[in-house]
Length: 134
Image (cartoon, rainbow, N blue to C red; front, side, top):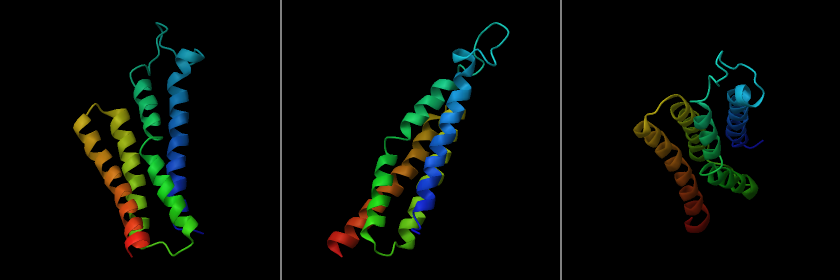
């Protein structure tokens, strides 16, 4: 089994959990379950943040899954550097979700995103160096 399957699966699991969280946050508005006494949604403030974060999971992470799939498809041993970067990406995605959903700290969110961005960019650079220049 490829050492990249687990971090890829963990990102998929994060997306699944975000879908569950979004469904729960929308439940008062959509199904009337869990409404406040005044009929409002107690999760009205957090629901757009969860929705935005879920959308974010299909932007830059696309490049993560593409590089992982390519590394696996090449059939060559995957370096520890690539596996470590994959885990940095996944941990960074979890942190990014927590910051985006539960805080309004744009600077921290940007910093955490930068970790994800650099990890995936480094994975692509290593692949390029190994396959094209190496």
